[in-house]
Length: 527
Image 1: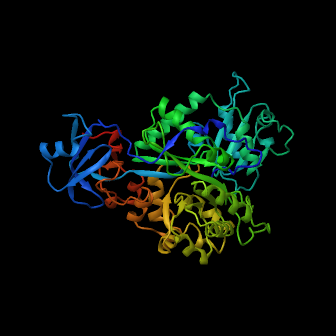
Image 2: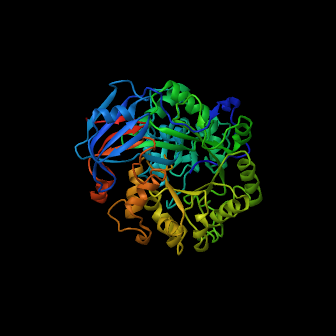
C-alpha cells in the first residue's frame, strides 16, 4: 500500500517528457521464431504445438508443423532458418503472470533490508537491529529494516528503543509507518520528534527525504528483481512507485537487463506534468520496444488496516476513530475528472468500506475507466457497483491470511465482507491480482494459492466462502488472459506440472521451466 502524495511531496521532475506512441507489438521485423512442440496448452489441456513469430502466438496446432508451414508463418518476421524448435515433452503452457501492484524500488531495497516480519513486539524488533550495527564502521551508515506489524503488539515503537547514535529506519509491513532513531531523524531535519514514529504522509515524506543509494546501484537492484520475477513466470507488472516511473523505467530498459513488461503509474503529484507531455494510459513508451506502457494515475482515499487509518463506516474498537480520509470526495472526483479528460485513468487506493464507497461514488460521478486498489472491506450493497464497465478491482490475496488476526480484531463482526474476492467475482467485478510488494513478496503464486485456499499455513481457511477457483485466480493474475490464443503476445510461462494437479503447498512453489516475453526467453531451464 504505497504512500499518498502529500502536499509537501516534491513534484515529479520535468524529465517525464519521454515520447509515447500508440500500443504496438514489441518486436523487430527479424525476431527469431520459435516452435514449442508437445505442449499441454491450458489447465488439463490437450497436447498441442505452438508457433511463435513476430513476438506473437502465430498458431496453436493439433499436428506438428512442417518446415513449409513454419516458413509460411514466419515469412516477413524471421530470418531464413532462424526458428528455434523446442520439445516441451508435455509441459504445461499458460499465459504469463502479471503482478498488478508493485512498488519496484521499495521492493528492490526490501530484498536487502533487515527482516522484521517475525518481531512480536517493539522491543524484539529493535533487538533484531543490534547484530547489524558495525562497531568499527562509520556510525553514519544508514541501517534499514522492513516488515514489522505493530497492530497487535503489547508495547509501542519509540525512538528510545533504537540506538540513538546510529541512523536506523524501520518500515512497517504496510509501508504506512516509519520508525526512526535519533540520528535518522536528524538526517531529515526532524531531530526533535518525540517518538520517532511517523505515520501516513509524515512517513512518506520522511522516506523521500532520506539519502538514497546511488542511482546506478538502485537501478541494478530493480533490474535484478525483474530477473527473479521472470524465474517464477512473471511477464509484467504495474509499478506504483512514487516516482517518475516512465523516465526511470526507460533508463533501466536502456541500461539494465529488464526481464518483464512494466506499466508505469503516475503519482498524483505528477499529473499535470504527465498531461503537459501528452502521456495517456495504455500508450506504449517510445524507445522501449513495447516493453513499457503508461499506467494509471495513483490517488488515495484512505490509509491502511494495520495503522488503523483505513476509512470505515464503523469506528475501530476502543478508539471511536473511523480512520483517515486522505482526499475528500469532491476533491477526488475533480482530480479523477481532470485526469480522465486527458486520457489518464485513475487508480484509487481505498481499503475501508467507507473509502471504497467514496471511490465508487467518484467513478460513477466522473464516468471514466480506472482501478480501485485494495478494496479490502466493502459494504454489502457496494459489491454490485464494482461491475461497472471499465473498472478493475486491484486486489492482493496474500494479504488476507497475513492480516486475518488484525482484521478479526479491528474489523470484528465485519470480516465476512473483508478480502471478499468470491463476492466481487459473483457480482461481476473484474479482478487483477497483485502483491503490493514489498508488503507481500513479489510472487503471484503466493497470491494465487491464498485466493484458492484462504490460508497460507496450518490454520484452517479464513472465510472459506470467499475461495475462488484456480481458473479465475490465474486469469486475474494474468491481466485477464485465460488461455493461449492465436494473435496474442507470446508472453507465456512453461510449467513442469499442470497447476490444477498440485497440492496447495506445491501451488505456491511450482516448477517454472521457462518464461517468454514477446517470444523471447527471459527465463529458461528447458530444451
